Amino acid sequence: MTEFENIVIGKSTIPSLIITVILMIAIPVIFFIYWRKKQKQQTKIGYLIAGAVGFIVSARVLELGVHLICIVADNPVSRFINGNTVAFVLYGIIMAGVFEECGRYIVLKYIMKKNRTPENAVMYGIGHGGIEILAVILPTMITYLAVAVMFSSGNVENALSTLNITEQTADAALPSVQAAATFDYAMMAMNVMERLFAMLLHIGLTVIVYYGVCNAKKACLPAAILLHMLMDTFPALYQRSVVPLWAVEIWVALWAAVIVFIAVKLYRKMKV
Image 1: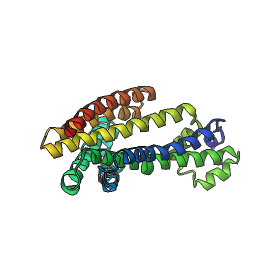
Image 2: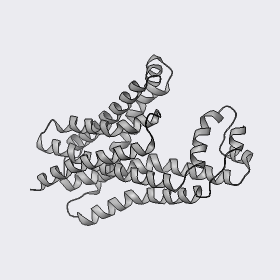
Image 3: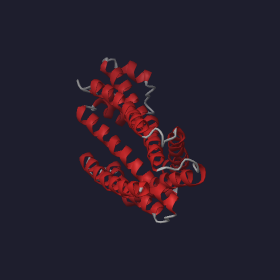
Image 4: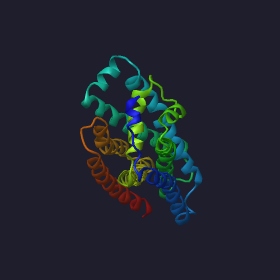
């Protein structure tokens, strides 16, 4: 497997990955500690847990289940979606928006009926965004770090054996190994910034959905779905190599600002 023999681990790769792993753990912890300390009397840990469970069920169980049928499995639907960029992007943003926002709505309206405060809406958002980091992003960064450490030793055969990469799985594994090898401080900064924006987005969208639940505003749920879809548009386009990563970061930052602006207005309205 010549491609793996040519992989070189950069000098900044392992240090930047170590820092990234630490920061990925720190981000949700800091958000939680800050908000809990500031709003201890108005917040309940149950909302943090509800946010985490809501994300896992809606995004990692139900949505992922649909992806297995419509994206992963080999059938006419998956071939059409994977073979058409427009279909792929529309499918991706619709699924993310509908599953995650409807998940928030169902939990906040039908399950978390007690202790309904704007502060707890923020706590729910921290749980939702935090578990996404810890359950989805962090394992990827840890895997990259493990790959970088193994390949940095110079013993490619041992690294491939340890990672269980064979001739049959080489093509699928190569992109991940290359991504780990080229990771640097710039990638670290972009990943950390993206997660900070994502945390603000999840908190903001939760406040919007929560406002609709508590004030019987039916428009809030579709508004949250639409905002989520718009925010995910560039990340989906990036997956198809249509736009560069820097454009994704600018796009996400823009929608983070818009969503937070709306959420702050609704939050203050609920506090009056």
